[in-house]
Length: 274
Image (cartoon, rainbow, N blue to C red; front, top):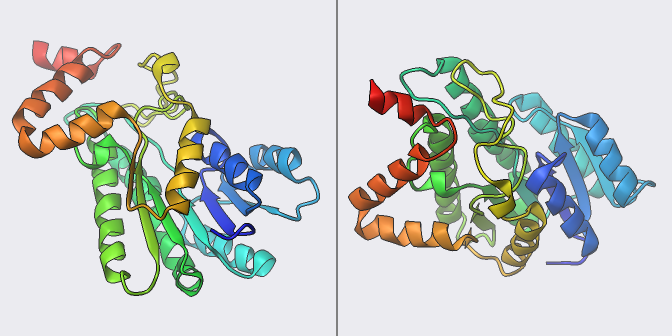
């Protein structure tokens, strides 16, 4: 990775995206940070680079194709190219399929999948020119269906299929494609997860103290990009479940069911009682 690489990060106003902006900037990269929360982006710019020499902020709603095009255009106008695209913007949900509104599933697909597709598509000419990297922030839910997360799992399965296809298509071009599966991370994504009717649940159902920090994920992601890895699985639990699922999928189904059943206020509890 060249020291002044241009890195575009979506969902950069908090959590993993924010930590990635700090980490890549720390190593000399020029950073383009995108999110809907403009005040948070402005605070990040003040923190990292008040003069705006190496940091560009771009208010972006990744569900809007025009916003994603504008993000890429602004990056090229400011820095002349793109070396790394980190598709990090994402939301989650927790509800049984029988209860969830279809609009919730569509919203997750618009943010988690189509937002990634738009940004990747528009950035492709520049990434191919630089032989750069495309990163997709996936999850355990990208290879194992998680109960009460039907929409979230669907988006991550779709993301992984899209990026694996892109990797194979581009294998003779020099383009690098990384699928990152960080496991449970202490971010606000679970506080803002959507309920069956689309409202935010407002409270995490997990003990965040036991989760990996966003800065740890960002450090490992930087290394994975630098080494041009195809996959990044950080959690030992996630890695174990990945391999067990290949050989004992039915057993892992039961383990996953029991794990989600034990969550605070798990929707599964009422479902099995019916």
